[in-house]
Every structure is written in C-alpha cells, then in structure tokens.
Length: 293
Image (cartoon, rainbow, N blue to C red; front, side, top):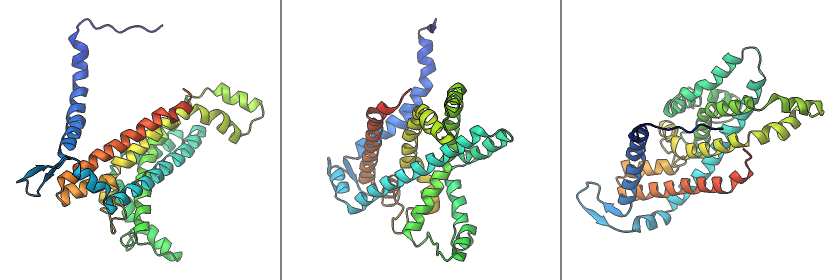
C-alpha cells in the first residue's frame, strides 16, 4: 500500500515546483513563443523595419531546395546516429554485465566519453581523421584509401556521424546496463535449465525485458541527433563542405546568425520543433504499444 504524501503548508508544493517551472518557462516556453512570433515577421538585417508577412516565411522555406535537402540529410543523419549509438552500447552493456574481474574499471572507461562536451568530442575525432596529421587518415592512406573530409561531403558526413554517435554511446550504455542488472537472474537460470543457448536467452528473455529501456533511449537519441549534435557539426565541419553536413538545427543557426534572416530562421525553428514533437507523439502513440512494462 502506497503512503500518500501530505504537505502541512499549502504553499510548500508550489514553492518546490517554482524553480523547475521558472527554468522551463524561461528556457523553453519563452524562446519557443518568441520564435513563433518572429516566424510571421520579416525583418531587415539592421532591425530598422519589421513587416508582418503571415505564413510567407514558411512557404518560402518549404519551396527552398536547400531546405528540402537539409530535411532529408537530417533524417539520414538522425537514423545513422541513433543506430550507431544504441547498438554498440547494447553490446558493451551485455559484455559489461558478464565481467567479473576489473568490472569497475571497465565500466568507468566506457562512461568517460559522456563527460566530454560535444564540441570537444568533435575536435578529438577531427584530429584523428585530419587528412594532414591524423593517425587514422594516415592508416587509410597506407591502405590505399584517400580520406579528406574537408573536400569530400560523404567523408565529412561520416566523420560527424561517428563523432556524434561515439559521444552518446556512454549514455546509452549506462541505461542498458541498469536495465540488464534489473532482470531477475532466476529467469536466466530457468532458461539455461531448459537448454536455451546464450543467443536464445538474449532474444527471448533479455531483449523483451529491455524494451522499456530501449524505447526510452530511442526517443532520447532521436532528440539528441536533432538538437545536441550542433556542437559536433559546428566544431568539425561548420556545415560544409558545400553544405554536405548542414542539418536542420545548423541551418537554423546559419540563416539566423550569419545570413541575418531572422524570420526564416525562426520559421525553421518552429518547423523543427513541430517535427520533433510529431516524431515523439508517433513513438509514444504507436511504438509504445509494443513495449511491455
């Protein structure tokens, strides 16, 4: 039987909620409202004249070939980052769950990348794959493969995907490991008594019980790929070469800060917010039905 929490002072619950509500209002609702307000305006680069244009900014964006290309580029990028961040994390968590000797050191080593800022993670990978001084690029040249992310758009996209996924593996590893450790050992022992192999135990016992954790990480990683990878792209490629790595969140920044087109940038941010909210709704509305808690 659950005990009901009762506050003697009626104002105390609201005072406890006030800091979180203030942070949400200042850092989410206020910027979102400002973006929605500016998305229907057209402002000159010097801010001297502001004109109400209605939905003209949205129409111009959706008819812009560069924006449509960035949209498809973002879809490919987010899928690749999500898969490359979750699959290795699950494999490492399964291996860590079986480690007996040196388990603490093994787990600590795998968690270290999570403490690194996205921009710093991008710089680390940029150094390793730098066509002039990078160790990995030198090894690829020795193998006969010319690697140059500064000129080749495919190489640049591969580099930012790897850097972004590597940064997120540690986060996924922590949750997968916690999910594995919460599975009752009696179920695994019963499966072993029934003669199930290790792979069969994983797919029939472990993986179904990990479905809540997997679903949670799926939502988190998609949001991460849409927003938090900005630092990696900005530090490694700056959206180049020739906009090959310019995803939606970076295009919002570039059009607003460099091109000084605040109306278009705000409209893009509104569309990006709607896309993420829509994807999250679809995940919770349809995919969650297959999740067993």
